[in-house]
Length: 171
Image 1 (cartoon, rainbow, N blue to C red):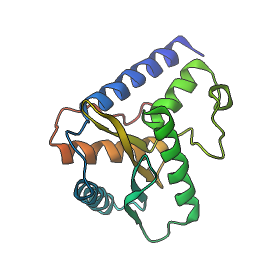
Image 2 (tube, rainbow, N blue to C red; image 1 turned 180 degrees about the horizontal axis):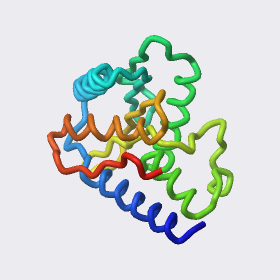
Image 3 (spheres, rainbow, N blue to C red; image 1 turned 90 degrees about the horizontal axis):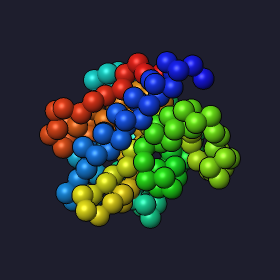
């Protein structure tokens, strides 16, 4: 790997860590899931993109789910794999992807079966301050960096946090 690419991946990892540090909740209820999910749906409509959205607790309970017309069971399978990744690693699925890219490791190197886990962005942890990760926000249907960025933009809006760094063209 080139030194330039390694530096870029390190910068992306730092930005992802910062996003997870900033975008934490003080509490998270079913009503929060509904409001956040509705914000993501509205933003996707505004962008005129077709995605599948799911908000799930670590137990697997689905608090919110919406699939735009044209989304299929394939998107549901991606959502489940991204959810499993976030639940297992307690980080965004894009963080895992970036970490593996940076280290040259594979999913099997970290004991994750690619049929059950996703090595791609689009899953983000719901972290409650002083508690930890209790669930995930997942988007599927765009390229994996755009899936991640849609979540970040909407989480920032929902939490009323303006200064969240966003990854647009890092890959």
